Image 1 (cartoon, helix red, strand yellow):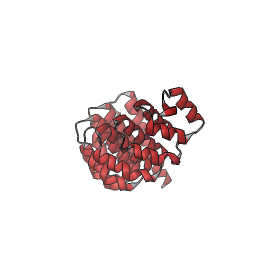
Image 2: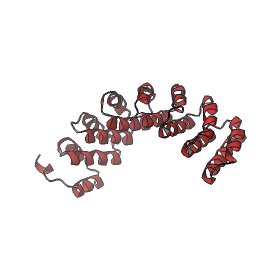
Image 3: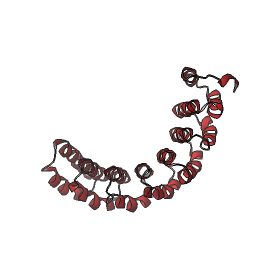
Image 4: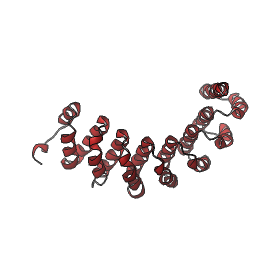
Length: 237
């Protein structure tokens, strides 16, 4: 490896500070496992599109850690050339790598990822991230699947689906979200209120007010914010 022998964190930090993309790419390809991971992270922070091809190659790295760091970096850079390779990663790699591929696909904003991400809602290890990515993509094809997710007995998945539905803003989610104002989990209640506020349908105001009566102060505060958001949207119409 020549000059790569014994490369250290401080060396990589200097290369990053100097924006020496070419050398960091060499490290990504030829360094040891830990250094390759560090190089991928550095390239993500630098957000230089010259790094895309090298990071795409690293999606095939033998190391799972290098693959997920590369997937994450590609999302940070935001180049659409990464969409198809990340979709392929979503289909074929290990769960932990798929999680980062899902996150990056959400960040890249290309709707060709919608169907593959919907498919990952069936994976317990990936579904939370897939749901949030679908929210970021904002495509209404995901709505019915996210509404179904509200029924799953996993509060982390329900809250991810709630957040996604709030971002998408489809009114068909209002009634299912209203039902969750009576959920046993406080986090689910708060996320339901937040999502209803983002959607902005006035028919949610009364159920929100009713749900506010016997709740803890921080749930009441979230509900109050949601009501204000809805009223603000109604005023803007």
